[in-house]
Length: 439
Image (cartoon, rainbow, N blue to C red; front, side, top):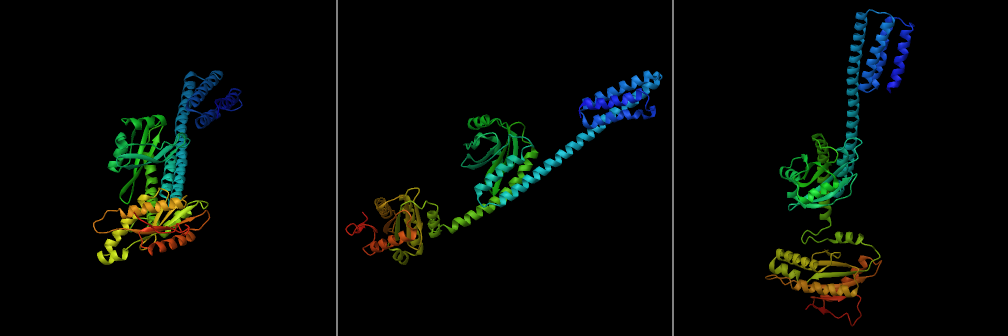
């Protein structure tokens, strides 16, 4: 309430008292403006009202020819009561305001934590878990109304720190990396596995430049562990104020939920990977190959290579199944080493492999088959002599994988029954369909 409004009320009371329309027994009414000011005005304004009341009472005493001693006594009493009202009510009001603000902040924190729990439990993608946790950590570690919110997530490997997720309401994605030795606070959190806060000083040149560009002066770091191993570090940063222990404890609650969500997400990822992977060679299995095909555009030509290991049964019979397994691992590694990054090789049966070369024509498919033959027979081993037979087929855009595999398998059958250790093109002309032996 502005002082002018309180002043009007004070003048009204003064006029009533001066004009004699109220008795002196109602003089305590002058405390009403003081009480109003104590509740609604700043402390300095309320003190001005108290002084105004004292002046009013002095004027009334002079007008009524009240004895000086009595007037001073009355003024002193009202000033004392008024001062106590201003101090007491003002303090009470401040406490009430602070309590309301604290309650609102507690509700905000509870809402954010609820959002954290729902968001983290709604995904089984580890990267999404990290992203959600970082965004909500920036939210929960910032006071209401503070726009400069910042948090990130760091992964540490071989002494190198890499930022893998970041939330910054006023800056751009940094995505930086630097030696762990350049960041003493982060290094301490990694070494002790305990959360820490501190001022960002004594940093290495790379980290110092990053913090300078981001205008970050304080930070907090909370290690995140999954199955007893360090997964990463959640970092929160302060631009306009230090990161407090309270901020750290709030984010620690997020980390607790984050660790549970990461444990579930990573376990799901392992199970999913295992379902798509051949355990012996670590190559995709038939289901994994189908998944790779689904992820590619269906309007793209591709070459299919069907491969069969020559003499696997004889190897098992002569040297044992452990030698046969070793032979399969060697061949799988040799095949993989010859392919491009976007190509796929999968083990789809006991001695069967399939390669899919995206964007490849007959020439590229034949060249890849020749490289595979050379790589397999050149694989060093004391007593195993790896070799394969290969059928090659090219699928035009829109052709299904099963159709192409049928053609490649037919070519593979011919390669096997013409001596093996060679490749045959399924779509070649009769003259070009002659066996091509490995060098």
